Length: 245
Image 1 (cartoon, helix red, strand yellow):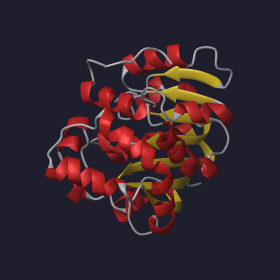
Image 2 (cartoon, helix red, strand yellow):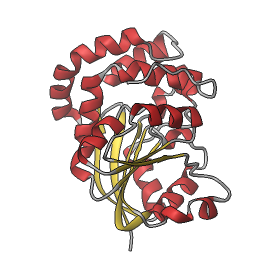
Image 3 (spheres, one colour):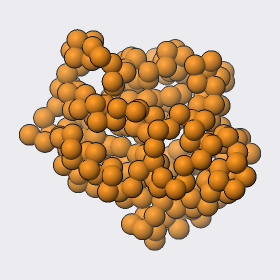
Image 4 (cartoon, helix red, strand yellow):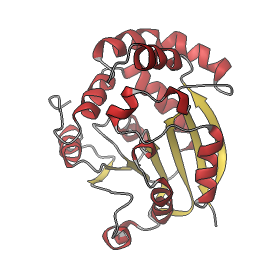
């Protein structure tokens, strides 16, 4: 992997991504949850420094993207020569000239992966309408976002989150913008406790390496807990929407 990156455009975000990059078990677990729903050629929007991209590229032809040029440069170095990589590009889902700038990839992808991205976008309806344009007929959007507005804290603010979701508000967002929701589940129940402790009670502003190291050691137990709780509660929500005809 290339050397560590702290982006001047996103200091807290890049620091958090770097901490999470060391949590290989956690990242693999997240990938395992979305893996069954991936079909066709893949576009990952908001690839960051490639924490999930690494797993996508094992099994699929993938185009990576991010709005931050520092991350795009990092991804170029990290995955240079990877035969499954079809390209790296900058994508702004709410660009006022979206149709013109991205005309070359309209209706190109079977799956768009959007993990921990939509909460960063104020105009989330516009973002999903533009994702529709990139999907082929019957294509699918796999989206993961933070749950429960009551958990919103300094960590969310530091990361640039506009909101957190419920299953209902996320499903409504997808359906209002042309998707039929075919799968919905919570993810990472135990994470609620950590987020509440560090973000709400202790008032921390970012996720550190120490917290992620502890959490990483507990992932095997946390995965078992999630088997019983993923219909009830979780720190994040995963939903899969199929593009309406």
